[in-house]
Length: 243
Length: 172
Image 1 (cartoon, each protein chain N blue to C red):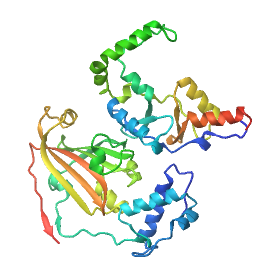
Image 2: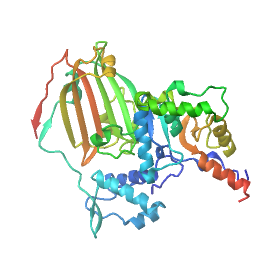
Image 3: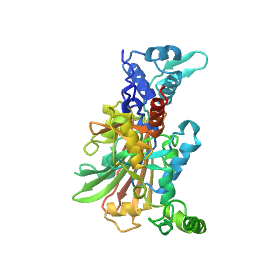
Image 4: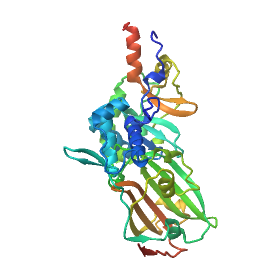
């Protein structure tokens, strides 16, 4: 049985969360089964009740578990997206289908939710966030600047991933099995900020397209992205399919 | 030290401390550190923020005194010849009060890299606790990074170092 590694710098509740998540995803704890009570889990993993409770609350938040008052905690059915589905991939939408580009990673570090980021990501201000900033270049010209914010506890390994050659969404879904079930998009035209103008080789205050995206896995927001795109060279296409 | 305890025995998780990139402003850092003070369960002593670069390399630490010093108009710094508390230091401090709104609010937009304590020394998990104490005293910092195989694995604080040395002094 997998146990807590006390030499691991990762917080204990995150380690417990990962162990329990694997039990659910691996089918050891099947859908609708009741999980052991907190005292039992404390004994198995030799951690405090507070650690177990925090890990379970996170699994509830991410849609893996459901608590029934007076009855216990049960494994949930995972939510499957239904209805109208956008069949255009994000890259196709922002860059155009079939356009070759290269990616420059400007930052891949950790920050805190300052300004209105806590509200946008629906996390408390003490939660660490992985911050990724990338610039995409087409024909030697910078066209697209993207900032991604991922709560650290959602996917700590994203800090070390190769995000120059891989899509963050694909990594989340294919490598870490964090399935995106909903995306909320907000699109508007804004004037570029000074730092954005410099990176995109634009005069200050040039109108650019701002796309803000909120990515959810079940009821938990797992990523917020802020993408800035030059509007002078492209037109945008979106295609939807009814499932 | 009697029990041969090492830095590794005393280190804590780096995620117990807020992280920011070096380009954050003093104003943003102030908001983060104040939040740590308000939330009693997250009130770590000493209060500090870890400052990282774009590739998540630790560059420095930011303590309360760094922020306060960063907000102080430059011309108010006492002469380097001044020793201890002087009359001129007192009169300079009253000048700061009169200029606070005009100067310090503008200085709050400075990036933290300008005022942080850069990482000068480091300890590893197998370093003796006395090495951590020595570096803290001589670099005037309250926390130090613990680096093993070029990777940050934790933080050691003056609080724990002092406690360990106190035990040895008091023969506990």
